[in-house]
Length: 185
Length: 280
Figure 1 (spheres, chains in turn blue, purple):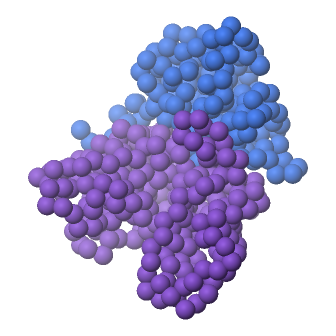
Figure 2: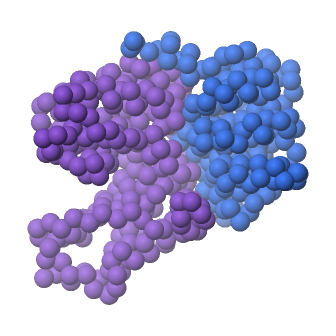
């Protein structure tokens, strides 16, 4: 499969060029955040505080890794279910995010909000965590260390594989895939 | 009467947890490889190839197959002639999990209270089921369960008039509606009958079947096959990216039920279908 190489921070031009179903290899920085980190980030913003990292142009990765073994940057790491972040996502879309990586269906409300805020939804392969860990060059906890696996990690990745699920042109890979390959009414 | 030190249980649980988290069952690896020959979508074949590679990397580098090393679910069949000595059985099981998860660098994924949500930091407590059976052996089955696929599971109390068509429609509707969330290709555990809580347990136990096996009762064997084919016509495909491999297996477990009831439970299992067992 031909893949498109993209680098974070993402530019408007690089995200506009993507279409649902495109295979991408992402290199650069990803910030992990899952349920508990999302809750704290939104609470911080609601109090008028600043987040521990600047999300402008960045990509959030919905993930909670296993601990790193000695000599490794990280343990196994793969996407968690994106839909659980839907409750917190609108607030974070205000901060200049360019992409999010996860797995699974999101609400129509969030899909439309991402479209209007020009944020791409990338789908990674759920459960391919030992494989995906090989793309991580460096990992540092940048916030909420006490949350353990739910802390925010700053990852340096090289050629992290994903597919474009929701693009900026209304494309929706999950829906298109079922229409193309589904044989049931 | 056979005496078994609970420290032996701790050792076994530790080893089973490590093996389950790192080594994907041969039956699943085989299915992932076979499916590459029949998968209709090029992207689907690529996902299947990556999942088979993931299993190889996990095993060769002793890394967890999935970052979600799961809720530790333990089924024990205890011979009625066994006497446990040297401590509390449940605590011995929890200690095995504590040690296994620490040694394997597994993720701690359990919060001590569902609303307060503070991590217990050692992946305990486990969910422990014990059955008393004849004999003086102890069988331990360790089945860590990931949260993503567990969240896509469901139960419905159907009216008996729904019959086999109602069961099929319910299972299909569930698999279709959860799509990529369950981490396809999935294993679908279906419980039919029993009471509300037992039906869910049947669906869970169905997940321990070997991929490729069939129910001994011809009616249910046929239903398993029909459901598998229907699910694979949904088009969801590996990782939900589209294709003809949405499920690797559908397994049904049944139990008698009340004249008023037709309970059906669907326990969704991602492709990291982990379960290891041992007999002491």
